Picture 1 (cartoon, rainbow, N blue to C red):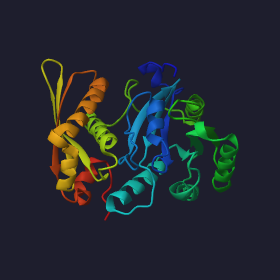
Picture 2 (cartoon, rainbow, N blue to C red; picture 1 turned 30 degrees about the vertical axis):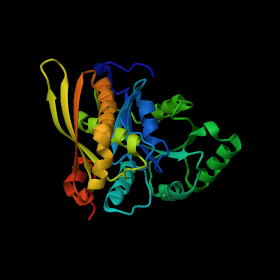
Picture 3 (cartoon, rainbow, N blue to C red; picture 1 turned 135 degrees about the vertical axis):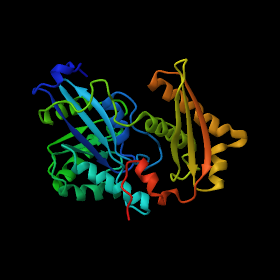
Picture 4 (cartoon, rainbow, N blue to C red; picture 1 turned 90 degrees about the vertical axis):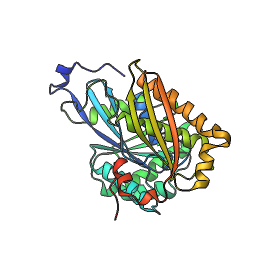
Length: 309
């Protein structure tokens, strides 16, 4: 990416800025793509589906354009109250954006949730871009077939074939977005990469490590909250977080034998949080049972979601 303008220049009328929403089925690669385009970790990435819960904004500079990415939750058939809140949040994020990217897993194709999203896209009136992701293992004939099928349903301005994992095609996508956004001043300071508060981002990182470690054993109805954040005189930071689960059996899984599992999760999270903060981090994790937290309106507010009635 090219360096952006100075603060004074950014206030001038020849700069551009705007919001780009990413829509797609769970595990289409939206979070990986946001992290790739921003150039830093701002969104949780996990093998477990439906891990992005609230709308996460990652901020990137491309030339004189500031692009604010809205990494929405994956859209899927909702079964529970939390599911409904996530899906409503995703469609709302798309309708508030300047440009909408439909991220399609090229290996899986237009099936299931991806097909349902495509059917709903004509109701979103913003400019739309089709992004075929994970193209590495897919034959060109299939990519062209997917592109044709998708464009039969929705009028996409452009189609890009990319790999969010290795960056292939991402520069062309960024150049298109930079040119497509409207003229205007930047929304955020030049060095800011996310509007997530650090307390929340730190909790998201720990939640990611939790899922990476236990994605087969642990249902995704767990939640991490940063309860204490103390800047120490020696320049380090003390962070206390609580991992909430719904049952005692889940608590035992998270703790592991002799506390080994939660210790490993804490070590991985501490390293990544420290790298982002560029500070020494003292991270303390506690595991608590909170039954039916998925029906608590306060938890939804903390995640930036509307509590569905």
